[in-house]
Image (cartoon, rainbow, N blue to C red; front, side, top):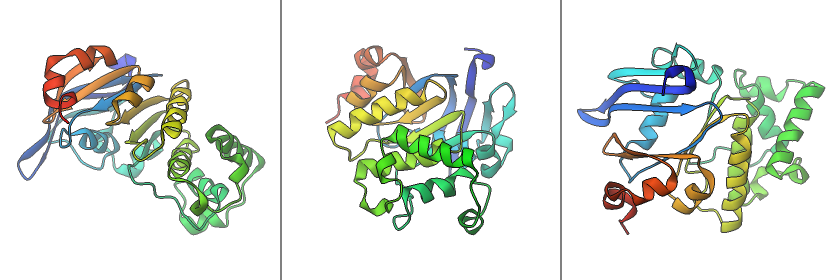
Amino acid sequence: MSESGSIIYLDGVTVSFDGFKALQEVDFYVDHGELRALIGPNGAGKTTLLDAICGKVKPDHGRVVFGQATELHKLEEHEITMMGIGRKFQTPSVFQNMTLFDNLTLATRHERGVFANLFHTLNRAQRDHIMSTLQTLGLEDKAHQQAGILSHGQIQWLEIGMVLVQDPTLFLLDEPVAGMTREEREKTSELLQWLAKDHAVLVVEHDMEFVRQTADRVTVLHEGQVLCEGSVEHVKSDPRVVEVYLGRG
């Protein structure tokens, strides 16, 4: 796939920590409007790949290219966020004692400080955008309740909303359905498929049933390298994947 067809492109990326190569010469891309799943055993390099995209770690070698020609590996984390890359981490970081609406208000203008946001008056368009986001999440009836009353799955959705209100073009999610009920997982699958209509979505996940229901394409990492890529059925039938990942436990 050429760079012009992708929204994010990793070209020969190697990342090392004290001599250990977490990523080794990785070539990887996600297209515009694609919902890609990234799977692999623990220690395969999945989170490191997200970190390389976001600027949390810098490659020893290789390039991370966003859009047509923006080289993310040359930018700082906050600059990359402003480029239109949003990330939901594995552990939610919502403000439990604040309302859902106020949590999204803080996320709306992420370049401001917390106190500046608290005292910033929203305009009508911003308020409508927040309420529309809560409606998309199915949480509009809880807009003015404290986030602490939410279930685990609802907190995960609020966290997704806190990224969504920033209007990213590339959405990164790290194990979004861990600990969810079956019903919550199904709703999250529908939510991510809806997001992929207007965003590129890259999701790290271990739940293969969720991946099967959700992703357009799957990339398998193993020991810092791309082992296999393709449809869910293609990946599941690859004997190398069965050996190093799917066949375990």
